[in-house]
Image (cartoon, rainbow, N blue to C red; front, side, top):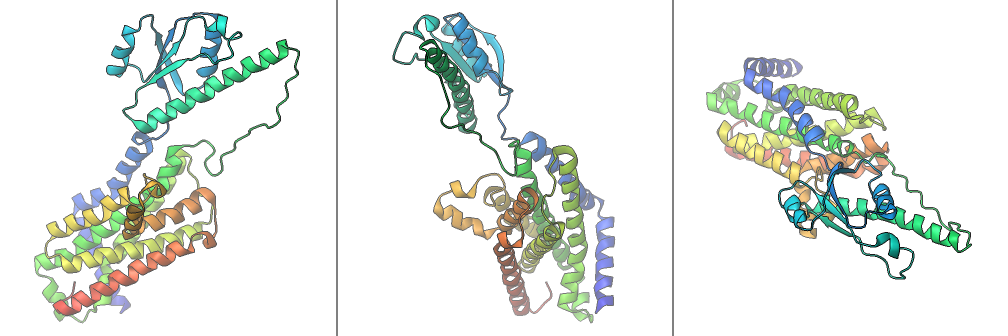
Length: 378
């Protein structure tokens, strides 16, 4: 049995090396996705292009500007003197936000009981970015308000003392970098695409070329064929995962804080689930074109949209949350983020591995049943 399995694997390796285009895609695709999601896709909002309309032009207004923009989140690109300029700046996307400081800010700030209204106009086309910009302004203006209140209390002879000091601390991702959130999901995306598409095309290729008849009359068993053909892609997928991990550490400072053995175990179980889906597609597809279309639809779309890779599952409607269970990437990403970012043990994600094993059992069983009914090898 082992000799036949090795023979099938050798044949598949020769086929992979012979098909230069496919080999280039399998090896170059991870690097391409790493560049795209590591550098281009970034949820961090920095360097917000801001214009200031300071009608007061006083020491108080300058202090307000200093406190509000004392961070890397803003880039002051200029000052304006007319209301008519605001619409042009926002319409043409020259500025993302405009801070408008009213007249008599310095005169009224210590006299009025009612707060002085400082207006911020934000480009709201991108809702998430607009919300982040709003929070940045809230934080800066709140700092300015605190200093004014302390100054007023000191002038009144009242000693100030903070009853509660707020000190937030972020666990697992202290810098709040999007790359640390995306890299684990990227591993899942690459592996599922590599496993499902490559395996489904490999098996269907035998049907198109007519070599499936030779396999039918040979002494090779269905298990030996499936394992032998899947093994090279299994190893290639592990290599791609290692590449993303190393590149993530070198370029994005994403290191594995948990157990490497648990990481390997989770990856092996996930690849078994993904390969079983590829085998199932190869059973029902008769041409490589159909197999590629089905594999792409099954692997890529759910992995990007429904897996939690980019969009938080908890924010989705309940029915959509139920739909997310159709992709094994969802469960793998939960395990990956737990191992890589949090350093958790098996007890924190063992249920995810059970779900992945269910995928493997269900799709391999379906493949065997369909293959038996068709009375031919997939």
